[in-house]
Length: 198
Image (cartoon, rainbow, N blue to C red; front, side):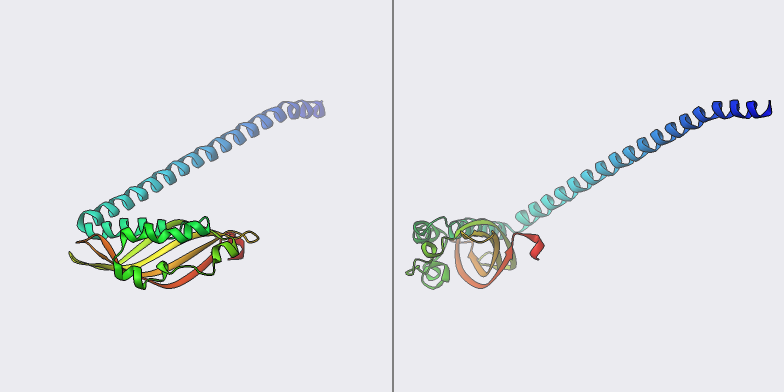
């Protein structure tokens, strides 16, 4: 009799234990899902806040240093023309487009205005695309903005993986005539686009 009572009690308690275990598991998954949603929401809010701060800083710089902003705009146009090279013809004609943004002195002395008599673009089959530029001003006045420009260029050769090359320049901009009056390339750094090799 005691044995059958024990067996009946066990039969009644097992479903209750399973039910309570299921409810506990369900509550735990709900809690984890809720925590995940809260964390995702907080992360999104944080990213939005950072973007807003970045925009505010850019607006403050543009309002307080309009010449720096103007220099950055002209440099962006110049480097777009300089480093968007899809063919030898594009390379050979880029100087005409770039001339609108620079002084005669830059045209005569800058490496970026030198012709390509060896037709290296045709020989290598390289295709280059201007990606973006970081302008780091070192001084700014009503007569001159000086700084460094780091230009990011994507390049592709027929039999090689894509790469990102950074060209570093010393630059100077004249706010009076809105022209670049110094364009000295001082270094080149190449990064493979495949991060596994870094």
